[in-house]
Length: 136
Image (cartoon, rainbow, N blue to C red; front, side, top):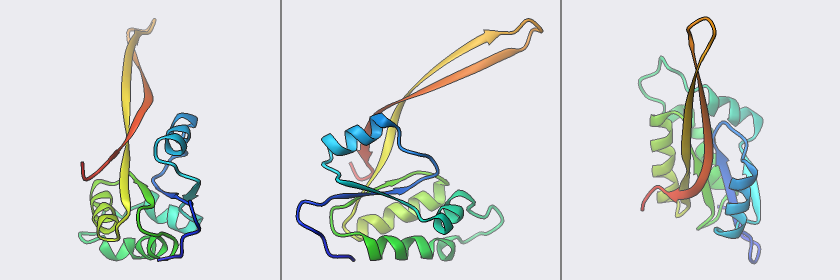
């Protein structure tokens, strides 16, 4: 793992979205994160397209695990969300590497609007509430 500069705490973004302003604010204020590290483009492509036709995906995730291993230090955060199996494997890896894997908890608000043609339009609004550690 990389060396840690004094008082630096990183959050590794292993997911397919961008942080919302609310997520970034919470990471900085509650978790004391000083920098955010998104997956490099090549790794983002891997994470966003976990092969649906492979029984075993551990080898697919190897470059992402290697990136985390090389760039992180103990107690850095890893926001991990995505394909269920890939997420489980990466959370397991993060825990074994003494990282703090978290996920975003959202409040979901849904409304239905009946359209003039009789169809129904569903609107879903997601509001970030907190980051929750996977192991708590």
